[in-house]
Image 1 (cartoon, one colour):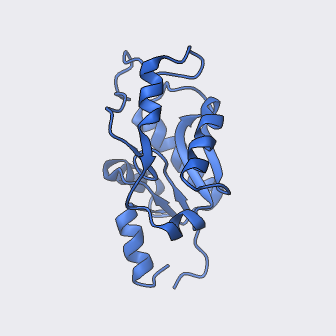
Image 2: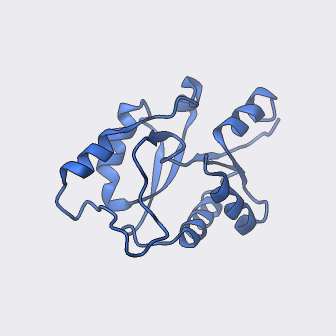
Length: 159
């Protein structure tokens, strides 16, 4: 059993899900809503479809201390409100400092930097392709897992 572990959780697609299509992050011409723009009915509809991931167990919610998200800092109030609605009240929320204007490579670089700065031992993100890129960037210093893989380690008594 590990004496110290600091799991840091991803938000979108991991802690919470949304059935509507995600923005195309790799397309620089795609329109990505920001909170600087007037809120449209389309944006409210998208945000209203966020719901907790059914894979998350009640014990997970009680033990989440850190959430690392690529959402921009300007969406902090709305994000904290969503987290409270899902039962997460005490977690430290680390958000991307600027608006959506980045590539997947920039997201990997930023999240890797944050994970190292925080001293993370585990990063839980259900995006396996993203996790693979993070593993390569972090050279094994942080264990990148899906929710199911994390639960397997907990059940095996490894964590």
